[in-house]
Every structure is written in C-alpha cells, then in structure tokens.
Image 1 (spheres, rainbow, N blue to C red):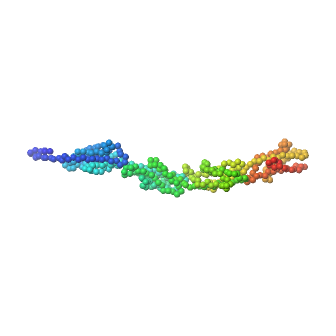
Image 2 (cartoon, rainbow, N blue to C red):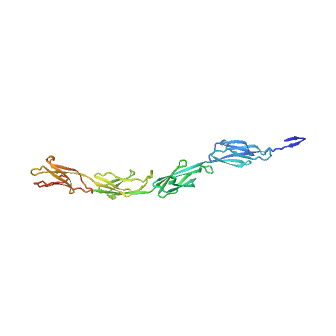
Length: 368
C-alpha cells in the first residue's frame, strides 16, 4: 500500500497476509452437557463465538485469522474462553498454534446421613467409617448425645475422572452385638445393632398324687407360643428351652418368657417361678366323690339321728336323718384327694341314742 506525495514524501506499507487456523476441541469428564459456547479472543477482545454440540463432534476450527495485528504489526495473541456451564468446572489447555482443549469436569456435592438403632441395651458409643470407592475417607462417633445420628456433608459426588463416587459405611464391631447396615446415599444409612445375648429357661414338672403319662408344655414369648415340649418320666419330667434371644428384634425390649400347659384331665395346674430362675409346673390330682348313708332300725324308730362325716378322722360335715328324709342322706361333691394328692379316707359316725346300740358298715363306694 503506497501513500503520500512529492511534498511530504511517499510511504510504502507492506502488510503480511499470513493467516492462521485455530482448532478447538471440547471434552467432558462425566456426563456430557447438551452444548458449549466457545469464544475466540484476539489480544483479549472477543472476535468470534461458536456453539459446539455432539452433532459437531464437539469440535470447531476458527479459520483464516490474521497472524499479525494490522496496526502494531505484532503477532496476535489468540485465546479461548467458554461460557460457564452449571455443574461443571472448566479447564483450558493448549496454544493457538497447537490448538486448544476445553475440558469440563462434572461437579456436585452430596451428604450421607447415618442413624443408629439398637435392639437391646445401648453401648456408650459407636464408631462409623465412611468409605468412598471402598477407601475410608472419614469417621464419626455416635452417642446418646448425638441422638445416635451423624451426617457426612459436602462430599464430592464425582471423582477426578467424572465418575460418580460410591459411598458406603462400616462400623467398628461391638462385642455381643450383630450389625446390620441398610439404606443408601439418597435415603441415608441405618446401622442396626442387635444384642446377641441368649437365655435358657429350665422347666420342671411335678405331680401331686398319681403322675400322668405325659405333659405338654408351651413356651411363650410376649404372649405368643414359640415352642412346645412333651415331658415324661423318661425325660425326668424336665426340659430346658435353650438359646433364646433375650431381646425383641423389633422393640429392643427384654422378651417376657412364660410357660403354659395343655390341661390334664383330673388335675389342677399351678405354675411358679420366673424365666431367669426357671419354672415349676405342678399338677395336683383332683376328683369328687359322693358318700351315701342309710339308717336302719331294729325296734321302734327315734324321731331323728345325727350323722357325722369324717375326712381323715376330722369331722367335716353332719346331717340329720328323719322319716321325712327316708332315713337317708348323701354327702356329695367331696374332694377325693387332699392338698398333697393323697386319697382322703372318709367314714361316718353317729351321735349315740340312749337305749340303742349302733353298728356302722359299708364304704364310700357302696355307701354306709
């Protein structure tokens, strides 16, 4: 380009017409976004923009760009920027001569909640470990003061390669407890510790009076039958219910163990004892008898006679016999056995009548 005149002189200006092309590649670490807006700057001033998508193969080349500044003649400094993409960190590498790479790495934070549940007595504290991709990254101590809860917060959702981090928890084992971990990052984790303490409950069967052939015993846990056992003379009328959980898996409360028995005809049942000391099931033989009395006369009859009923030689009742009673009476609903299960001996006596001798014959079965 020539400018000027004779008076001022002429200027011949030569401008280098060399151009450059600047390739730009877009990379995603993690899930790719829908698009990215790339800006080309020349000496700090935006001169062009381009939207990249999967359809453009996330690439673009800015072409036929002047290499030199027309005013200064200096090499133009070309750089690249990007409109920020929510949820991603951006890094830009490369040069104008080699091309630029714009890398977006997915970001995000998560929180992991932990709640402790107990079945049975609580320990003083527990230690929970947080693992990220199976590597321990943090731990927390849970106590009654923390309400047995903790939240691990501000955790990276993705690793440096844009892959989602897998978080899980473990617990330092506690002697005497089984540990069960459930849940997930979104809903939180629950660590349930179940006391593994067990109890054994001995049961002894006793008979007052003649023993039966067998007895069916039932073990109940909080009112629900969970086991039954037949005891006989061969078992020495004993049984031990073993390895029973001490605490309820749902409520965490100590289980109330009790014993019942299938009723045995002809016996009354009493149950004594406790789960900790053992139970005694006592069957006392029962039965009722009736005892009939008939009065016979040799000679004129008196107006009445008084009959006494004796049980094991102790008077327990009496009756007055007259012509109106047909000189008969029945003592009924009498206990056949005493409190020790022994059969009671019944007999009758008569209040003496002046001028008469008295003779008593018979038995309970046939009457007196």
